Image 1 (cartoon, rainbow, N blue to C red):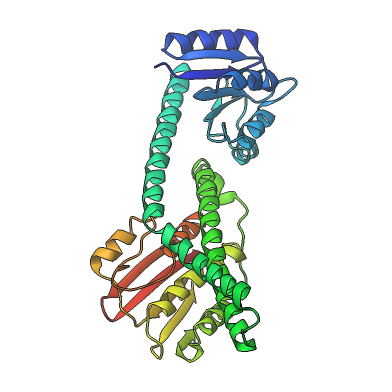
Image 2 (cartoon, rainbow, N blue to C red):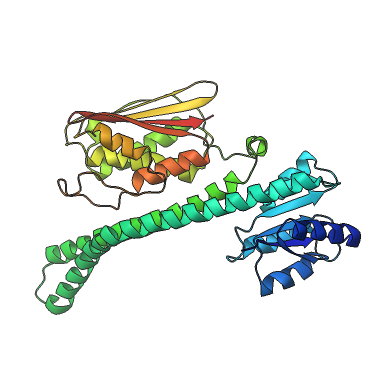
Length: 372
């Protein structure tokens, strides 16, 4: 089936010539004179790719792309800009709007055709990847999520039923116990929901980042956490307090700054600390060490719990889009296995790294690297 291409160009002669070439090359190409007309064409049939001039009357290329990225039907539609001059600022502006590629005028036909094929092929690969990831997610949810949702819901419904039918006979201690059960179960549900929302948000951010050239990424303003030591101490204390293990935690921290939002940084440390606390016995040490050089800030978190096998660590290296819990049948545990997936994706977003080393039955160390 021919790929459908929409060419948006106000210069009638250039539009006519390019449409002739595109159709001759085997594409189903149609034209529009500006962004407004392009949106009318798209409303009838969404193309596989758009080639657009930037400076046009009525609605220019930037406004066109803005409209496309605001619609779920066209948010991933490949867009190639044609421009008379490709300055750094123009490139940056286009990338911020969601443009996938640039070609300068006068257009070299061979470059145009090659770029079209590259963008169509990339879009097809992304579609296949999303379908595969969706299948993996569906499989995982089918086996894990019903249990994870049912358990806290049962706690809430059970406690509520007792309160409704036995309210007159319950003592104050009974009421406090019922309240505690409801609150604990509700917070567990809240964390599951928040993690899935964060996962989806990260996939969108990562997909946007992949469309931006590396030279533009390097110049993008970065979120920054300053006084990292203070943030670490606060997060670690909060986590350890939840498990009543403040005396088990031993910190050797250096101050510094990292490229990351405070919220994402907090999530990374919380998830890794929570794993360390959850999967190691009480009264065993947990060591947190941090250091900084000119380009990176490293944090290592070591617990002396059950550890991981080489096969499990190898599986983790392939987990960016897969949620997995290890030894679920052997060890009862809460959660849907999202913690390390979220950590990996957050670090990837800020060009950091996660690696894990472990001695099965003895210890596990998570190595977190942030850019400074």
